[in-house]
Every structure is written in C-alpha cells, then in structure tokens.
Image 1 (cartoon, one colour):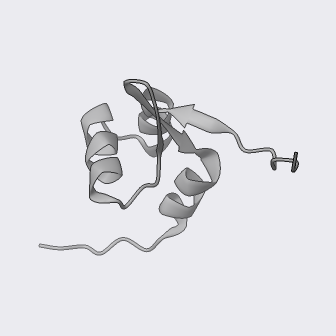
Image 2 (tube, rainbow, N blue to C red):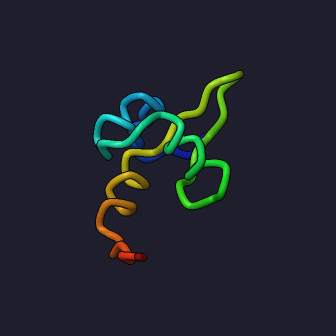
Image 3 (spheres, rainbow, N blue to C red):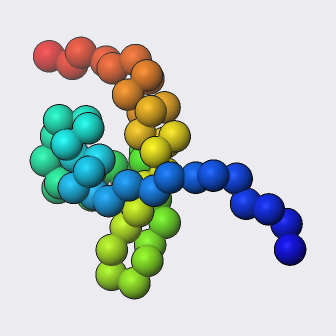
Length: 63
C-alpha cells in the first residue's frame, strides 16, 4: 500500500475560525468549488493546505 502524505483535515467550524467568516460562508465556498473538501458522512473536512492557499489568493474589492 502506498504511503499517504501527512494531510491535516479541518472541520467547517475550524476553517470558519481561521478565515474569520461564518460557517455558512465556508459551506458556500465548498459548494461553489472555491474551497476543496472531502465529505465524511454528513460532514465536510477541508485540507489545511486548501485553507492556506485560499487565504493567500488575492481578493477583489467590489463596490
């Protein structure tokens, strides 16, 4: 069996705390495909690297 890299998965609540947004915003990002996630049963887990990448992306200021 091939070795799996050490990937740390975060809950939606943990991602929301890190990104300083609501859990609903995290769910929207996951459902839109902007934030990759894996579904375990009825809950989602987001790779920590995906959160880091999302926070480093430039944000457009609309308005």
